[in-house]
Image (tube, rainbow, N blue to C red; front, side, top):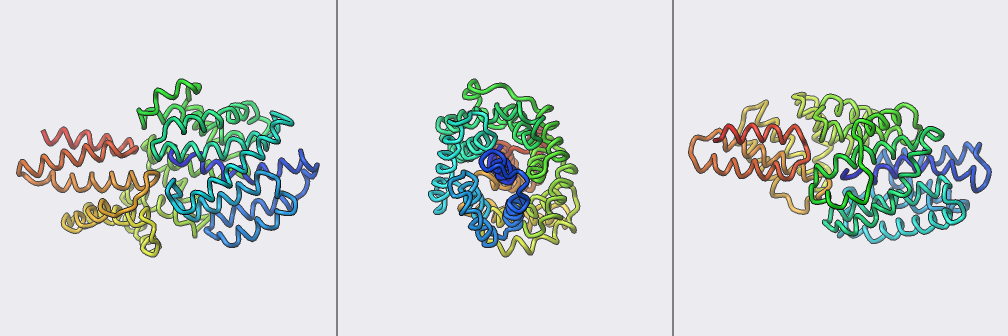
Length: 382
Protein backbone atom coordinates (compact mmCIF):
# COMPACT_ATOMS: atom_id res chain seq x y z
CA UNK A 1 0.00 0.00 0.00
CA UNK A 2 3.02 2.27 0.05
CA UNK A 3 2.18 4.05 -3.04
CA UNK A 4 -1.26 2.78 -3.99
CA UNK A 5 -3.20 6.04 -3.59
CA UNK A 6 -0.54 8.06 -5.31
CA UNK A 7 -0.73 5.85 -8.37
CA UNK A 8 -4.53 5.79 -8.40
CA UNK A 9 -4.33 9.52 -8.98
CA UNK A 10 -2.22 9.40 -12.07
CA UNK A 11 -4.38 7.04 -14.04
CA UNK A 12 -7.71 8.55 -13.05
CA UNK A 13 -7.02 12.16 -13.97
CA UNK A 14 -7.69 11.66 -17.65
CA UNK A 15 -10.84 9.73 -16.91
CA UNK A 16 -12.26 12.37 -14.65
CA UNK A 17 -11.39 15.15 -17.06
CA UNK A 18 -13.41 13.49 -19.78
CA UNK A 19 -16.29 12.75 -17.40
CA UNK A 20 -16.46 16.36 -16.27
CA UNK A 21 -16.96 17.42 -19.87
CA UNK A 22 -20.23 15.55 -19.82
CA UNK A 23 -21.48 16.83 -16.48
CA UNK A 24 -20.23 20.40 -16.45
CA UNK A 25 -20.16 21.43 -20.08
CA UNK A 26 -22.01 18.71 -21.98
CA UNK A 27 -19.00 18.09 -24.21
CA UNK A 28 -18.55 14.37 -23.75
CA UNK A 29 -17.48 14.03 -27.36
CA UNK A 30 -14.76 16.64 -26.99
CA UNK A 31 -11.95 14.47 -28.35
CA UNK A 32 -9.25 17.19 -28.24
CA UNK A 33 -9.71 17.65 -24.48
CA UNK A 34 -9.54 13.91 -23.89
CA UNK A 35 -6.42 13.68 -26.02
CA UNK A 36 -4.81 16.49 -24.02
CA UNK A 37 -5.44 14.61 -20.79
CA UNK A 38 -3.84 11.48 -22.22
CA UNK A 39 -0.85 13.43 -23.49
CA UNK A 40 -0.29 14.95 -20.04
CA UNK A 41 -0.35 11.53 -18.44
CA UNK A 42 2.04 10.15 -21.03
CA UNK A 43 4.45 13.04 -20.47
CA UNK A 44 4.39 12.41 -16.71
CA UNK A 45 5.02 8.68 -17.13
CA UNK A 46 7.80 9.44 -19.61
CA UNK A 47 9.59 11.77 -17.19
CA UNK A 48 8.86 14.72 -19.50
CA UNK A 49 7.82 17.13 -16.79
CA UNK A 50 8.33 20.41 -18.65
CA UNK A 51 6.15 19.17 -21.49
CA UNK A 52 3.52 18.03 -18.98
CA UNK A 53 3.43 21.50 -17.40
CA UNK A 54 3.08 23.14 -20.80
CA UNK A 55 0.11 20.93 -21.61
CA UNK A 56 -1.49 21.63 -18.24
CA UNK A 57 -1.41 25.38 -18.91
CA UNK A 58 -3.57 24.81 -21.99
CA UNK A 59 -6.33 23.55 -19.70
CA UNK A 60 -6.35 26.65 -17.49
CA UNK A 61 -8.88 28.71 -19.48
CA UNK A 62 -11.49 25.98 -19.11
CA UNK A 63 -10.47 24.05 -16.01
CA UNK A 64 -8.90 26.62 -13.67
CA UNK A 65 -11.76 26.03 -11.19
CA UNK A 66 -11.84 22.27 -11.61
CA UNK A 67 -9.96 19.93 -9.25
CA UNK A 68 -8.26 18.19 -12.18
CA UNK A 69 -6.21 21.29 -12.91
CA UNK A 70 -4.63 21.23 -9.44
CA UNK A 71 -4.31 17.48 -9.21
CA UNK A 72 -2.37 17.32 -12.47
CA UNK A 73 0.09 19.88 -11.12
CA UNK A 74 0.46 17.84 -7.92
CA UNK A 75 1.14 14.70 -9.95
CA UNK A 76 3.99 16.38 -11.78
CA UNK A 77 5.62 17.18 -8.43
CA UNK A 78 4.93 13.68 -7.15
CA UNK A 79 6.76 11.99 -10.00
CA UNK A 80 9.46 14.58 -10.56
CA UNK A 81 10.60 14.47 -6.94
CA UNK A 82 9.81 10.84 -6.28
CA UNK A 83 9.81 9.79 -3.51
CA UNK A 84 8.03 12.96 -2.36
CA UNK A 85 7.60 12.58 1.39
CA UNK A 86 6.85 14.95 4.24
CA UNK A 87 9.93 17.06 4.91
CA UNK A 88 10.86 17.38 1.24
CA UNK A 89 11.19 21.04 0.11
CA UNK A 90 8.46 20.54 -2.50
CA UNK A 91 5.99 18.88 -0.15
CA UNK A 92 4.40 22.15 1.01
CA UNK A 93 3.50 23.18 -2.54
CA UNK A 94 2.35 19.63 -3.21
CA UNK A 95 0.08 19.63 -0.17
CA UNK A 96 -1.42 23.00 -1.12
CA UNK A 97 -2.35 21.68 -4.55
CA UNK A 98 -3.98 18.63 -3.02
CA UNK A 99 -5.93 20.79 -0.58
CA UNK A 100 -7.24 22.96 -3.41
CA UNK A 101 -8.24 19.83 -5.30
CA UNK A 102 -10.21 18.60 -2.28
CA UNK A 103 -11.96 21.95 -1.83
CA UNK A 104 -13.15 22.05 -5.41
CA UNK A 105 -14.27 18.42 -5.29
CA UNK A 106 -16.36 19.10 -2.20
CA UNK A 107 -18.01 22.06 -3.90
CA UNK A 108 -19.13 19.75 -6.69
CA UNK A 109 -20.36 17.10 -4.26
CA UNK A 110 -22.51 19.63 -2.43
CA UNK A 111 -24.43 20.07 -5.67
CA UNK A 112 -24.58 16.35 -6.41
CA UNK A 113 -23.14 13.83 -3.94
CA UNK A 114 -22.86 11.19 -6.66
CA UNK A 115 -21.15 13.30 -9.34
CA UNK A 116 -18.36 11.10 -10.65
CA UNK A 117 -15.56 13.65 -10.83
CA UNK A 118 -16.48 14.97 -7.40
CA UNK A 119 -16.23 11.45 -5.99
CA UNK A 120 -12.89 10.77 -7.66
CA UNK A 121 -11.29 14.06 -6.78
CA UNK A 122 -12.29 13.77 -3.15
CA UNK A 123 -10.76 10.31 -3.01
CA UNK A 124 -7.44 11.13 -4.62
CA UNK A 125 -5.93 13.94 -2.52
CA UNK A 126 -7.14 12.41 0.73
CA UNK A 127 -5.62 9.10 -0.27
CA UNK A 128 -2.28 10.72 -1.02
CA UNK A 129 -2.25 12.56 2.27
CA UNK A 130 -3.17 9.39 4.16
CA UNK A 131 -0.20 7.68 2.56
CA UNK A 132 2.18 10.46 3.56
CA UNK A 133 0.96 10.33 7.16
CA UNK A 134 1.35 6.56 7.35
CA UNK A 135 4.91 6.77 6.09
CA UNK A 136 5.76 9.49 8.63
CA UNK A 137 4.18 7.51 11.48
CA UNK A 138 1.22 9.85 12.10
CA UNK A 139 -1.38 7.10 12.17
CA UNK A 140 -4.26 9.10 13.63
CA UNK A 141 -3.95 11.72 10.92
CA UNK A 142 -3.65 8.95 8.34
CA UNK A 143 -6.89 7.39 9.54
CA UNK A 144 -8.60 10.77 9.31
CA UNK A 145 -7.62 11.18 5.67
CA UNK A 146 -8.36 7.53 5.01
CA UNK A 147 -11.89 7.85 6.30
CA UNK A 148 -12.50 10.85 4.04
CA UNK A 149 -11.14 8.90 1.08
CA UNK A 150 -13.13 5.77 1.89
CA UNK A 151 -16.50 7.48 1.52
CA UNK A 152 -15.56 8.14 -2.10
CA UNK A 153 -14.07 4.67 -2.63
CA UNK A 154 -17.26 3.07 -1.36
CA UNK A 155 -19.33 4.95 -3.90
CA UNK A 156 -16.97 3.73 -6.58
CA UNK A 157 -17.79 0.11 -5.66
CA UNK A 158 -21.26 0.60 -7.09
CA UNK A 159 -20.14 2.46 -10.19
CA UNK A 160 -17.50 0.13 -11.64
CA UNK A 161 -19.84 -1.84 -13.88
CA UNK A 162 -21.11 1.31 -15.56
CA UNK A 163 -17.68 2.97 -15.64
CA UNK A 164 -14.77 0.57 -15.88
CA UNK A 165 -12.13 2.87 -14.36
CA UNK A 166 -13.66 2.15 -10.95
CA UNK A 167 -12.39 -1.42 -11.18
CA UNK A 168 -8.99 0.04 -10.37
CA UNK A 169 -9.85 1.93 -7.17
CA UNK A 170 -12.11 -0.91 -6.02
CA UNK A 171 -9.37 -3.48 -6.58
CA UNK A 172 -6.81 -1.44 -4.70
CA UNK A 173 -9.02 -0.98 -1.67
CA UNK A 174 -10.10 -4.60 -1.49
CA UNK A 175 -6.57 -5.95 -1.76
CA UNK A 176 -4.74 -3.54 0.51
CA UNK A 177 -7.45 -3.35 3.18
CA UNK A 178 -6.66 -7.02 3.77
CA UNK A 179 -2.90 -6.86 3.23
CA UNK A 180 -1.99 -3.61 4.96
CA UNK A 181 -2.82 -4.67 8.56
CA UNK A 182 -0.66 -7.76 8.04
CA UNK A 183 2.27 -5.79 6.63
CA UNK A 184 2.05 -3.15 9.34
CA UNK A 185 0.36 -4.60 12.44
CA UNK A 186 0.47 -1.22 14.18
CA UNK A 187 -2.30 -0.04 11.87
CA UNK A 188 -4.56 -3.02 12.62
CA UNK A 189 -6.53 -1.43 15.51
CA UNK A 190 -7.48 1.48 13.28
CA UNK A 191 -8.96 -0.80 10.62
CA UNK A 192 -12.13 -1.18 12.69
CA UNK A 193 -13.23 2.03 11.00
CA UNK A 194 -13.15 0.34 7.57
CA UNK A 195 -14.88 -2.71 6.05
CA UNK A 196 -12.78 -5.84 5.60
CA UNK A 197 -10.88 -6.36 2.40
CA UNK A 198 -10.71 -9.36 0.09
CA UNK A 199 -7.39 -10.05 -1.66
CA UNK A 200 -8.82 -12.44 -4.22
CA UNK A 201 -11.53 -10.00 -5.30
CA UNK A 202 -9.02 -7.18 -5.24
CA UNK A 203 -6.76 -9.00 -7.69
CA UNK A 204 -9.74 -9.82 -9.89
CA UNK A 205 -10.77 -6.17 -10.04
CA UNK A 206 -7.24 -5.05 -10.86
CA UNK A 207 -7.06 -7.62 -13.64
CA UNK A 208 -10.35 -6.30 -14.99
CA UNK A 209 -8.88 -2.81 -14.97
CA UNK A 210 -5.94 -3.96 -17.12
CA UNK A 211 -8.44 -5.29 -19.66
CA UNK A 212 -11.29 -2.78 -19.61
CA UNK A 213 -9.96 0.52 -18.33
CA UNK A 214 -8.50 3.11 -20.65
CA UNK A 215 -6.80 5.65 -18.40
CA UNK A 216 -6.00 3.42 -15.42
CA UNK A 217 -4.81 0.38 -17.36
CA UNK A 218 -1.13 1.17 -16.80
CA UNK A 219 -1.74 1.94 -13.14
CA UNK A 220 -3.34 -1.45 -12.65
CA UNK A 221 -0.19 -3.01 -14.10
CA UNK A 222 1.97 -0.99 -11.69
CA UNK A 223 0.10 -2.31 -8.69
CA UNK A 224 -0.18 -5.85 -9.92
CA UNK A 225 3.60 -5.83 -10.39
CA UNK A 226 4.13 -4.51 -6.88
CA UNK A 227 1.66 -6.95 -5.35
CA UNK A 228 3.26 -9.92 -7.12
CA UNK A 229 6.71 -8.77 -6.02
CA UNK A 230 5.89 -8.00 -2.40
CA UNK A 231 3.02 -10.14 -1.24
CA UNK A 232 2.20 -12.89 -3.73
CA UNK A 233 5.83 -14.01 -4.21
CA UNK A 234 5.31 -14.32 -7.96
CA UNK A 235 8.45 -12.73 -9.34
CA UNK A 236 7.78 -13.83 -12.90
CA UNK A 237 4.39 -12.11 -13.04
CA UNK A 238 5.94 -9.02 -11.46
CA UNK A 239 8.58 -8.93 -14.18
CA UNK A 240 5.93 -9.18 -16.89
CA UNK A 241 4.01 -6.22 -15.46
CA UNK A 242 7.02 -3.93 -15.01
CA UNK A 243 8.52 -5.05 -18.30
CA UNK A 244 5.37 -4.12 -20.16
CA UNK A 245 5.33 -0.71 -18.50
CA UNK A 246 8.98 -0.09 -19.29
CA UNK A 247 8.48 -1.06 -22.91
CA UNK A 248 5.77 1.59 -23.20
CA UNK A 249 7.66 4.22 -21.18
CA UNK A 250 11.40 3.52 -21.63
CA UNK A 251 12.44 6.81 -19.99
CA UNK A 252 10.65 6.03 -16.74
CA UNK A 253 13.48 5.34 -14.29
CA UNK A 254 11.18 3.93 -11.63
CA UNK A 255 9.79 1.30 -14.00
CA UNK A 256 13.36 0.46 -15.03
CA UNK A 257 14.44 0.05 -11.41
CA UNK A 258 11.57 -2.30 -10.56
CA UNK A 259 12.04 -4.31 -13.74
CA UNK A 260 15.77 -4.66 -13.13
CA UNK A 261 15.07 -5.75 -9.58
CA UNK A 262 12.71 -8.47 -10.80
CA UNK A 263 15.30 -9.68 -13.31
CA UNK A 264 17.96 -9.95 -10.58
CA UNK A 265 15.65 -11.93 -8.29
CA UNK A 266 14.89 -14.26 -11.21
CA UNK A 267 18.61 -14.82 -11.84
CA UNK A 268 18.56 -12.94 -15.16
CA UNK A 269 21.62 -10.95 -14.14
CA UNK A 270 23.01 -9.96 -17.51
CA UNK A 271 19.67 -8.52 -18.63
CA UNK A 272 19.40 -6.51 -15.42
CA UNK A 273 22.88 -5.03 -15.85
CA UNK A 274 21.73 -3.26 -19.01
CA UNK A 275 19.87 -0.75 -16.81
CA UNK A 276 22.57 -0.03 -14.23
CA UNK A 277 24.13 2.85 -16.18
CA UNK A 278 20.78 4.67 -16.04
CA UNK A 279 20.69 4.45 -12.24
CA UNK A 280 24.28 5.65 -11.84
CA UNK A 281 23.25 9.02 -13.30
CA UNK A 282 20.47 9.54 -10.75
CA UNK A 283 21.29 11.17 -7.42
CA UNK A 284 18.18 10.09 -5.53
CA UNK A 285 19.04 7.74 -2.63
CA UNK A 286 16.34 5.37 -3.86
CA UNK A 287 18.25 4.66 -7.07
CA UNK A 288 21.68 4.64 -5.46
CA UNK A 289 20.59 2.20 -2.76
CA UNK A 290 18.76 0.03 -5.27
CA UNK A 291 21.72 -0.02 -7.66
CA UNK A 292 24.19 -1.15 -4.99
CA UNK A 293 21.86 -3.83 -3.72
CA UNK A 294 21.33 -5.29 -7.18
CA UNK A 295 25.05 -5.12 -7.91
CA UNK A 296 25.72 -6.78 -4.56
CA UNK A 297 23.37 -9.66 -5.30
CA UNK A 298 25.09 -10.22 -8.64
CA UNK A 299 28.53 -10.12 -7.00
CA UNK A 300 27.40 -12.61 -4.37
CA UNK A 301 25.45 -15.06 -6.51
CA UNK A 302 26.90 -14.84 -10.00
CA UNK A 303 30.49 -13.81 -9.40
CA UNK A 304 30.82 -15.57 -6.02
CA UNK A 305 32.72 -12.55 -4.73
CA UNK A 306 31.71 -12.10 -1.11
CA UNK A 307 34.16 -9.27 -0.52
CA UNK A 308 32.71 -7.15 -3.32
CA UNK A 309 29.16 -8.07 -2.32
CA UNK A 310 29.86 -7.08 1.28
CA UNK A 311 31.24 -3.74 0.15
CA UNK A 312 28.21 -2.99 -2.02
CA UNK A 313 25.68 -4.09 0.60
CA UNK A 314 27.46 -1.98 3.19
CA UNK A 315 27.37 1.08 0.97
CA UNK A 316 23.64 0.58 0.41
CA UNK A 317 22.92 0.40 4.13
CA UNK A 318 24.98 3.51 4.88
CA UNK A 319 23.53 5.83 2.23
CA UNK A 320 21.88 8.75 3.98
CA UNK A 321 18.47 10.23 3.27
CA UNK A 322 16.77 6.99 2.29
CA UNK A 323 12.99 7.05 1.99
CA UNK A 324 10.52 4.85 3.82
CA UNK A 325 8.34 4.27 0.81
CA UNK A 326 10.67 2.53 -1.64
CA UNK A 327 14.17 2.12 -0.20
CA UNK A 328 13.10 0.25 2.91
CA UNK A 329 12.94 -3.11 1.12
CA UNK A 330 16.25 -2.48 -0.65
CA UNK A 331 17.91 -1.88 2.73
CA UNK A 332 16.34 -5.10 3.99
CA UNK A 333 17.78 -6.95 0.98
CA UNK A 334 21.20 -5.45 1.74
CA UNK A 335 21.08 -6.51 5.38
CA UNK A 336 19.95 -10.00 4.40
CA UNK A 337 22.89 -10.16 1.99
CA UNK A 338 25.35 -9.12 4.69
CA UNK A 339 23.81 -11.71 7.00
CA UNK A 340 24.24 -14.48 4.41
CA UNK A 341 27.90 -13.60 4.02
CA UNK A 342 28.47 -13.60 7.79
CA UNK A 343 26.55 -16.84 8.22
CA UNK A 344 29.07 -18.63 6.00
CA UNK A 345 31.75 -18.03 8.63
CA UNK A 346 32.24 -20.60 11.36
CA UNK A 347 33.04 -18.42 14.37
CA UNK A 348 30.32 -17.80 16.93
CA UNK A 349 30.51 -14.01 16.83
CA UNK A 350 29.95 -13.82 13.07
CA UNK A 351 26.97 -16.16 13.21
CA UNK A 352 25.48 -14.17 16.06
CA UNK A 353 25.87 -10.97 14.03
CA UNK A 354 24.30 -12.71 11.03
CA UNK A 355 21.26 -13.67 13.08
CA UNK A 356 20.82 -10.08 14.27
CA UNK A 357 21.03 -8.74 10.71
CA UNK A 358 18.54 -11.33 9.47
CA UNK A 359 16.08 -10.19 12.12
CA UNK A 360 16.54 -6.55 11.16
CA UNK A 361 15.93 -7.39 7.51
CA UNK A 362 12.81 -9.39 8.34
CA UNK A 363 11.43 -6.51 10.41
CA UNK A 364 11.84 -3.96 7.64
CA UNK A 365 10.78 -5.87 4.53
CA UNK A 366 7.34 -6.46 3.07
CA UNK A 367 8.65 -9.09 0.66
CA UNK A 368 6.95 -12.29 1.79
CA UNK A 369 9.41 -14.49 -0.11
CA UNK A 370 12.34 -12.78 1.63
CA UNK A 371 10.74 -13.31 5.03
CA UNK A 372 10.49 -17.04 4.29
CA UNK A 373 14.13 -17.17 3.20
CA UNK A 374 15.19 -15.39 6.38
CA UNK A 375 13.16 -17.74 8.53
CA UNK A 376 14.94 -20.75 7.03
CA UNK A 377 18.34 -19.06 7.32
CA UNK A 378 17.85 -18.31 11.02
CA UNK A 379 16.90 -21.93 11.64
CA UNK A 380 20.15 -22.97 9.98
CA UNK A 381 22.15 -20.82 12.40
CA UNK A 382 20.89 -22.66 15.48
